[in-house]
Image (cartoon, rainbow, N blue to C red):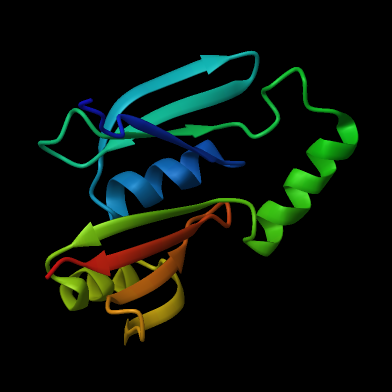
Length: 136
């Protein structure tokens, strides 16, 4: 079996702020930006890697989500406990410095973890936790 991760989804509550974070701070390409019914789905991904994407989606777009669930999602996003993605880089310190200089919210500075990786963490404008591992 030959499987790979093609697309992952993260919620956003401010498309323009999310676009600025993923494009201007992380340096991702904008692959698609679709609006419908006052909502936007923005597809981004690392330059030169068209087979890997993140879709930034409105969290309440699913018609099966109840009003109570929408409130819970909004509360979890505000606390930063709703969604997480882990990225990887060969230059953790340089990446950390670039994101910090770009105004990204730092959650954790580069740290040697006891489970064998070195990583750091940020929050995107929607509160999603962005962990970045150093590839060794």
